[in-house]
Length: 596
Image (cartoon, rainbow, N blue to C red; front, top):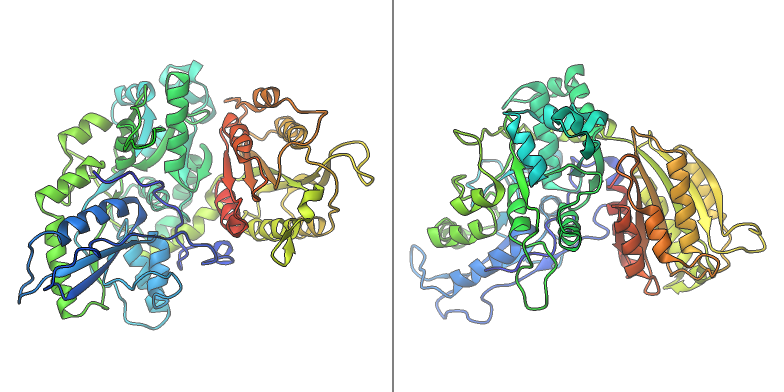
């Protein structure tokens, strides 16, 4: 059994379909995991090397399968054999890298590409066409596995929804709104909100957005750009996006937190979230303990006490098809090797390995074990939406930025004296300020944003350890950048007092139609004796499902108390981003801002 990967989407698309803001820092920090298979035991007659680049969520399994292939007795047509080497890169970044001639990753140029979805072969077509090149991925490609998009809910909620009979995307995710579970006879469960990956950073997030548009247009194929502009369609999509709790850069990490809370608290708790839109494969992994905390040497942790149930909307869903793409860079012998490796991957033994991770087979068939784990599918099987034209996907992403749920964000920036410490030719503060400036470019112009600085009382801040620099209101990036540039660095780190006060202000100015969040950027730990009670702070910021205010933290230096920041974030159902390696701060900011 292949080990469960640490993350399904460490870093994703910077393609023509990505918003202009993301392009500002495209390619600066790209998480790459390379794993070679079979290099230590080559057969003497294996003169053909086949380089395969896989999407990250199945890379560990592909390494195992490549080793199995390399150690076997397979022969190619015409004689000889091949050695397969596997590297990994997120699908969207791989598409961009292929369009750029495959440079800058440090990975071998592939002859076979295994993205998560054919959506990326379409986006690569657009990139090649824009550059005046012959498209590298002009056709349709056979899948090696499949995973449909589902709405995952804790079992009691999912079973109740199923009892209502076939329901659509809008009925499940968009119609309940503030009335919440009252519409299902459970007012004590509160509001209905759900989690979703940002479609600019996640294949499943992109697929969820496509599925929503299909449901809105009442189509299962041939979605057009005119459909996207239909007021009824945009209203439908906006209504669904309004119920998003917050966006995620990686639903795997969200599920890890959920599993930890389930095992610690005696049952699943999604905080203010009633559901998560994600790949069916991840529901299986979660239910089997693959995303639970585990002891050293364990492949899987304990199964959660309350499993998730996969709910299938009646209009249909989108399938992630994991295509096997042979690229033009393959020579004749490599094409023969690719053909043989594809045959190998679709044989029963290898398909069983995919099934154990929660994938459906290459013909979309689900194993009995998978259905027992995630819940039975509708009578007659699932209906699937056809992939839209790549140009429609690009237009969809462009329109999503205006339809997504807007945010109410208060940024607290550490200005303690330790921020003067050097990082290369800059100070910690300069690095943090530069990252904040870049990250702010990714926010929506309709977001509301405020800025505080904090340290402790200083000569320039006599009465309080924190100070309002820009009042929470309409987003004025130039003003915020100007205030950051003029901040004075001095004092100690009044972390707890600042988080508590900022959280209280967001509660006082809570907007039920927005994502309400405190963002804390710090290089240290609490150094403020007047407020040193962590237990009280955790109680103060604990999520109120009726008025959720989440705390997001970035720890960007080795002296940062990341463990405490993580506890604070989790108490509020937010997230802490570890950028203690200063080179990771830009990436952390992109992931952070993608939550809004």
